[in-house]
Image (tube, rainbow, N blue to C red; front, side, top):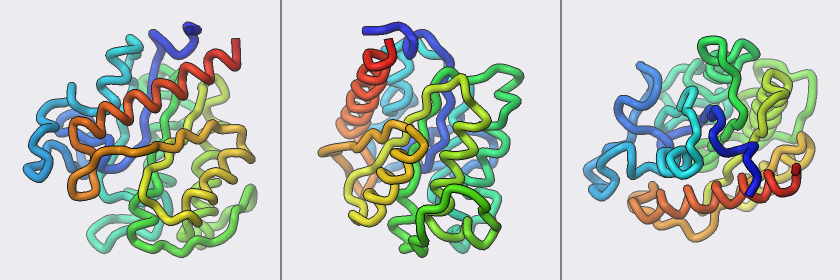
Length: 220
């Protein structure tokens, strides 16, 4: 196993799957802890905490917010500024977090766009206007583009949830291929109420960790 993605700085941009009370920026929406999933009781039970613990990573920021979309077609109770493509302007900017830049970035979104049947749109690699960001594929491409441009030092990964429409999954794959971002397609994740339970969290941590190991090996 290589060392590049061990003992390094990590930033996360995510939705409910990656939240936990006290672990995300103030004002972000929380899902965990949740009485509907009683076996995820502490940050140590989450997929991302398990990942950073095993790899001795330093978490720069976990900018995750429950119910949020990548696109600006947000839920009625949310603001446009809650969308991934808006939040990232702060958490994944070229300035870093308190002047420190991540070595690894994990993007874990698209689930809410899929669940809300946000207009799919077309893959789009330049020239985005605000109206384009209301559709999922242009917004996803924009997110990848901005992340890569502003963080050339980082290894960027996109995590693809299970149980999404094939059109959504295929679109993420294609966007990732264009930007050279590894797509981590989750398999067989244990869930309750559509969200990972303790076993599911462990499975996500293991699958993402394997992807990081494979990336390191390929880039040695």
